[in-house]
Image (cartoon, rainbow, N blue to C red; front, side):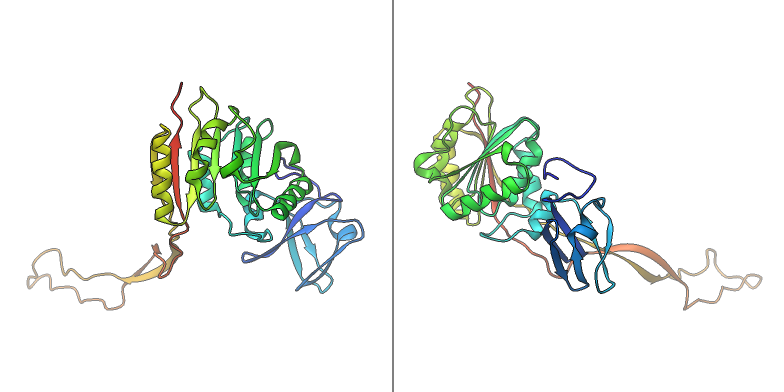
Length: 298
């Protein structure tokens, strides 16, 4: 099992996602002889998980059942233990697209946080790329390093505990893309320019919740000759698909009524059923602003 590679069977030491329902999932470290308690009863790792195919339906001790899913960055995002506020799939998808990540890309990230975006980056750049991720908080950096090893992607990532605004990313001229999720990203812009490849026109993305942060970041990017500076906000609006019944309007006869052809009686019960969508009454709005820029080619 790896978050960057797919495997068919559950093995001892894997991290599997136990799916109890759309709003209820949990990551489980599979261990020989271990057990996991759910509201449907216990799952015995040796008998119920190890050797089963991912996606299998597993019966718990109380007779209920769950599905056991292969871990993906998307599933990890909704089940991971929160050490910080995290990025979710709506913003992550836009970031990986706009940074033009692909297998073999080298990426610098700060800060690592809970590793939500990091896992998506690693899948995008595997099997030959590399992620240099910098976290200011020592315990968070250590925990992230342990999770990368547990998820078998540690060969794709280097974790550094440092202040990127003062010390930079620890690399120079190697990165295809830079991602910043820190309180003062404008202070890291000079270090981002150093870390990017000199000749490749690398991309930078900064995530900030406040417009004042965006303004100062854009000023710093322009001051260091970055091009194509733009800021966007991703707002997800999910429409509900449902069946509705609508009355058929009575437009009257096609031709004027005559003594030989009296008007047809109006029908008060004629309806038609159709599928339609309705917008949500409430929806999550602002998460943060994404600022993108391109290093000029030299």
